[in-house]
Image (cartoon, rainbow, N blue to C red; front, side, top):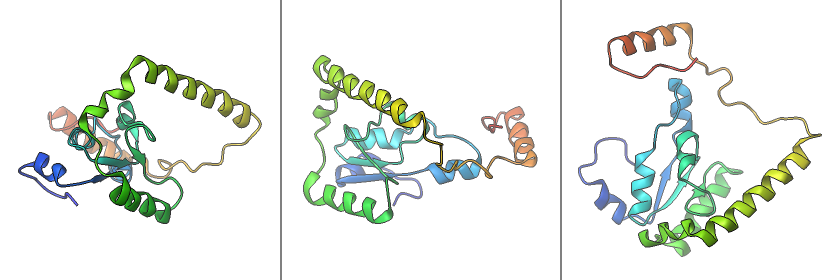
Amino acid sequence: MIDGWVDDLTAWFQRSKVYLYDSLEHWIDVGATEGFGLPPLEALANGCMVFSGVNDALADYLDPGFNCRKLRVHSLQWDVAAILDAIRNGGPCSPDSLFHPYTTQQVTGRLSILLSEIQRFFEVAGPAERDIEDLWEGRRPSALQRLKGAAKVLCGASHPVPR
């Protein structure tokens, strides 16, 4: 677990097969969203299999089933089994293979899958009522938190806290 400064993050990643990155609860608690998420990208570049909640900006480059695996899919037991499987069987992926998904053939195939999933979503979701819990509900920043965030922004110390 990384919970502080690491002098040589690359060496740490090169000794690892998997990298777990799930910051959703942290960002919900501070009332902000995920930034670019550089550590998972560095882990991929160093050959680690990344497991992530794929929240916010991480979805810009993490693609579950293609270049990472998703955490919080079903249960902790499910996640642990997937992680252990990656350690035993998956091993680290080659950094050269990171570019393979972006060939014309691969992009075309993925686009076909995505369009089929969108079509299926609207076929199924149309009559169904939404029942997924909104994790942000009840954790929105209070007026005091927003005021503190505004003060930090005015002092140049931070980005604004979302409403």
